[in-house]
Length: 294
Image (cartoon, rainbow, N blue to C red; front, side, top):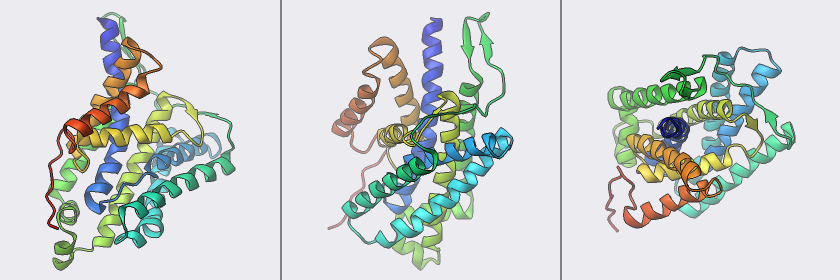
C-alpha cells in the first residue's frame, strides 16, 4: 500500500512538471494557433541559467529562479518576434519546420556554450522531506514544491485569463483574431505576451525538473517537452484545465508503468496513450471540436 502511495505521489509530482510545460504549448496553440516545438528547449535554457546563477554568480536559489524566468521570458519574446511572427499567414508545415529549426538552434547553442558533458544540478528546494505513516511514506521536498507550484500556477493563470483585461484579450484573440483587431486589441502584443508567459513557466518547470532529476545537459528539455506536448493533446490542446489533467494523468501513467510493467516501456506507454487518444477522441479529454467553414 505504501509503495502504491509513493508511486502515486511521484507520478503527481512528475505530472505537475508536465502540466506546467504543457501550459506553454496549450496557450500558444490556443491563441496563436502555432505549435512551438522549441518550447522544450526553453526549459533547458531556464535550467542552465539557474545553474549558472547559483554556481558561478553566487545568487541564492530563489533569485536564480527569478533570473531564469526573466531570461526565458525575453527569449520567448525574441523567438516569437523573429521566428514566428513573419509566419503568421504561412502554412502549418512552414511553422513546424521553423519550430524544429529553432529547437536545434537552442540545443546546439547550449552545446557550444556549456559543452556536452552533463552538469550536476543542485536542487533549489531546501525544505525537508515530509514523513507520513510513521516514516513508511516519505515525500521529498522537491515533490511537495512541484505539486504546490503547479496548483498555484494553474489557479493563478485561470483567474488571470478569466478576470483581467489582458486575460480576456487573450481569450478574444483565441476565438477570433480578426474580430479582436476590430475591437482595438493589440494582437501582436497579446501573442508576444502569451509566448512570454509560456517561456517563464518553462523556466520554472526546468528548474523543478532538474531539482528532482539533477542531470543537466543540452538535450535535457527534449523528451520532457515531447511528453508535455503529449499531455497537452491528451487533455485537450488549447485548454488550461486540459493541460493540468493531461499532465497529471500522463505522469501517473508513466510512473506506474515503470513500476508495475517495465522500466524500459515507460516512455512507450506515454506515446501509446497519445495514439489511443488521437484515435478515440482527437480533441482530447477536455477539448471541443471546432467547425471551420471552407
